[in-house]
Length: 316
Image (cartoon, rainbow, N blue to C red):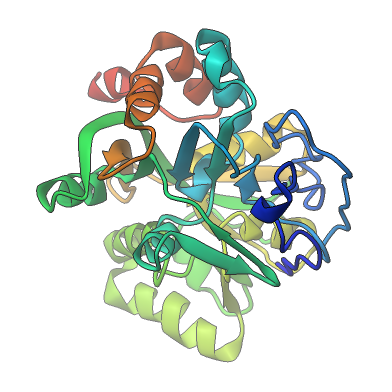
């Protein structure tokens, strides 16, 4: 993804500036994911000047959320529903949907991140990622009030019609099958995928996909986000990739020619998502309200719509 910003470097200094722009390319965002009510002059050039993972106006925000990127398609509905319950926060929520590892790097770098020529420094009130990570951070005193709110499983994403006849994880190791796979360096799902590959074909399958095929160019690792996988499939650059089941459901819900191949339970890996209020959060009360909302039936129904499972469902 070529995410460059040539304007807006004086975001907060301009007061009502500080605007980021939702993504219109890939096509599924269509610039609808910016909750800021005053957008000023909207300047957006697909794949040149766009920031798909920063949403809203960070200046004077009353709630700042750092959320693992695989929830990017759920957030617009969640934010809208939350603002109905908390109208005092309407238009004053800023959220980022970068990979959890990138968000942690941002937090460790004084809460600042630079995209192209744009630098944003904003302290999160809530951090959301895998439950194991959140509970570890809670033990370290980095977050408090941790709640677990949803689960997800893995699925093989393929083009509609399955032209390469991919039916299992083992098929991904075949010579000539072009893959788009999450980079485990900053996406936790990469390690979970490796675990599933190991269950299906041992260390040999992991090596074939994450070493041999990377070296010969048949596996391309994500640079920013595993949402790059559907982009590459839609553009004919990849034959398959392992993603969360929710991402397959989302692509299908918006009419993209994407299908999924189920992974048997004995080979699959389940992720649990959690969030916590960040230590020293400027808006800790609002953060706690957000975490409470995530556990509500309204929020859970939105997650289920996109293929996530609630903790209650997962326990059944």
